[in-house]
Image 1 (cartoon, rainbow, N blue to C red):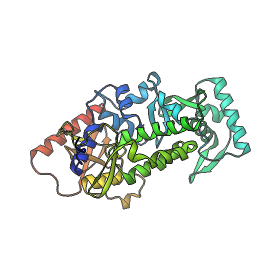
Image 2 (spheres, rainbow, N blue to C red):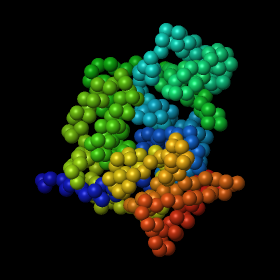
Image 3 (cartoon, rainbow, N blue to C red):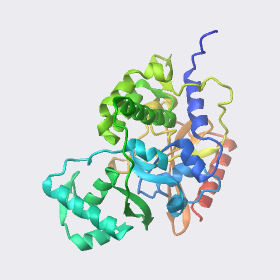
Image 4 (cartoon, one colour):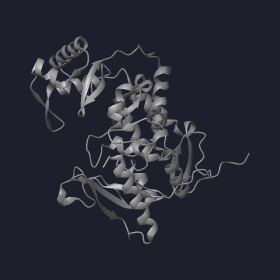
Length: 364
């Protein structure tokens, strides 16, 4: 047998787009196929999870995920970031400790909060705050309500789940996970499954990006940090890989970046900053030749692209970005370009169609 053909950088780019932007399907099937949908509370013009799913779910409307969440077999959880994943994946993440060390007093408070939620069923954070009046605490440079901090910590540890949201606020309920096989083989197997999810979601990945995602994954499963490192050490035997333009790239076994079926249509899409196609900023620059940044948390006078610049994917190119906002019930847009604005009517037609789809998604 002849060795597999080494893909070009362009073939990797088309492969990345085509495998992630699959044919629109149902909401449960899209989440299952992605494996993880990163969440973000900012609406500009919609939440990141809605913007991501709108590209992959037929007739999706902003807010569908939150409205349908209680009836779907999915969970909110911290993985490599915070987001949504299939319920069967949740067991791979637990048991894990609190995201930061709790002293004796905080552990006692957490035990009381857990007992309160277990007794009362689905519980809003304001109910916990009203019952306990824990006060406030400094965390991550902010002044946080202690009750909220405890609920988030119990959720991270897998002792609570998000049952639903009310106006974007989490409503919690207690949950118990079945005991896990804690043998070395089982722990290594769980770490491997989780890293496989990462590679499946973001492939193809340069080696440096795979290493970075492994560090994020160790934050998500600190109790499996050693096992994640061990899986990464054997990445070349676990995943398909090739040297392309001096860099090593990885993708799932059995997939062929050089396959002709990885064709890209000529639609224009506004991609969320956390969309899998553009999430890896290192890969973004390799594929499209310019540096993309999310500047939402940068002071306005320092912004170059705008508050919530969304890359515009047109075919296999990303010529620039768009800032979209709704003012008085109308969608407004400002465009920016990394180079010259594309000439001709094809780009304008694709832009007009994308703006129309965005209005439908926003129910404007």
